[in-house]
Amino acid sequence: MKPSKVELNYRNNKFQLTVDNQPFYINGAGVDFGSIKSLAKYGGNAFRTWRVNNGEKTGREILDEAYQNGLMVCMGLEVERERHGFDYDDEQAVAKQMAAIKQDIVVLKDHPALLMWGIGNELNLRHKNPKVWDAVNDLSKMIHQIDPNHPTTTMLAGAEPEVIALVAESCPDLDLLSFQIYGAIDKLPGFLQESNYKGAYMITEWGATGHWECDSTSWDRPIEANSSVKANNYHARYVDYIAADTKQCIGSFVFLWGQKQERTPTWYGLFLDNNNSTEAAQVMQYLWTGKWAQHRIPKIGQLSINGMLAEESVCLQQDQTYNAKIELETSHKNLSFRWELMKEVDRELESDGGDFEPTPDIVWQQSNSNTSSEVAFSPPLTGEFRLFVYIDDGYGGSATANMPILIES
Image (tube, rainbow, N blue to C red; front, side, top):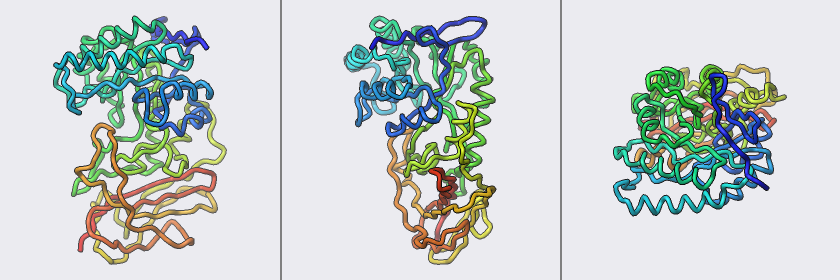
């Protein structure tokens, strides 16, 4: 196998990525590594990683699996973050980091599934020392000296104009910038104009509205949109702000092609922990291929408890009986419903910047088999909880909704 030649060209007033001289628009996703095969099945052509070794597979194994499934990889390079305690004034530590990353470049640079290098993830998040950008630029120079076949980028949290301008000026060796932006993606065109950035970019994380961007209850728990609202947002954000920029944007990586716990088990994953797909995954399949799935996941409406919605900051009494209901906008037959009451994440355990977060305990589940769109339940404990409903369609797809509730004695 020989390396792919990946180039970023500027022609006809727009940027174009090519792989072995063939145009390549990135229809990608951030993946967890059990889902690479399904990404190809849904029509994706690339994925990104956050680090070379994910604890389960080596970088070479990841690239091999990508190659077997016809996918390209934006390989993430783990660069230490100031918010985790790394000191960019420590020249010895910075040199040690570069030496370790250099070893990874040498090992993986000639793999044909390699698309480009992602130098660090959200290094601007709560950083103060500008020397981090010197380190990023030096890493890019080192990579280009060793590997002339693949571009370099760095992934930024958000796309504030001052950050774009700072990184573009501080890291001139980077081939392009990458932005990670969720509900604020509608502000991206204005941010780019204000920053005066004229280069190419990718959006390396986008998707559901972030938990830091949405409305919250009176006790400050974020309110998550249901799966149908999310699916509509995925469609609009892709069409209006990603595909719409044909001059500077060379593609995107939707977040997350898999499942993760971040405030809830359903917030950011396009799949659930039982591997069922969501409506948003089907939206991505349509956007990438132009074809809808044969069996469309049911659309849902509002989740309520005794007629109250999440926006009303619902407070309940322990051991009292309440009726929850999910509205359906579907003619699907033979749907099955799963209702769960889950603790909220302890506030001191809430993740920062996508770091690991433990999944809270489930304190109640509907136990009978006669499931429906309505359920009666009695909260067994006091505290902060969420009521979840999962609607399975029988074809490997699920709709989901949840609402925060405060249970008092």
